[in-house]
Length: 289
Image (cartoon, rainbow, N blue to C red):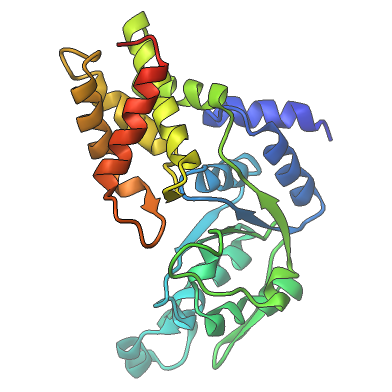
């Protein structure tokens, strides 16, 4: 298996910038038929990589987005009451969930934010992951077809609203960590997403990336902005008649970043004040004024 060739093909086909090491790890794990758990902050591209890999390996893609309300029937499926009354407990009366559909089709089950799934629902996964089979009461036992695999994404435990994953469940996955990408790669991503071309827009991109990166390093910020913050900020700034005006940068940055950062607890300062400080410090360090 020529891993560098596969990495390049995935990058080109799905417009993925960088991520060579993470793609290598994913390909290696997939080659030995292991299930994958991708851990990283919001906006680092976990879903993009999962969809790209599933599509590249010609797998049907089934998705479930988790929350504290994700119950067993959301994952497995359920008997439709009116159909049961008219037909009984037969296959035509059953609405399959994403897990059995992925197993029956030899496809990829993508579990978004698995650590928001209640523990009781997590436990349903164990037999499917380990023995590659599930039992649907009153209907049948499903054995996974060749090619079935699971990719789960995991937010850091510090995030609000997450549930601790059981050791038995974690033991069934290969763990891959996704960090923020390098500044150079983020610049390329922002450039690609905004369609920037001339020198002025290039400088807007550079400053947008620096402001976004600074939110991750600031002592008052618990969770900094994802790449989406840099993209949104650059796109907003390109619409201003004067992209060299510091007031415009502050205004656009508050608009773009306010919902994308979380401050440390107990701060007397507001998000607007923290973002303003970050923007002005970046502009002071820049020659773009």
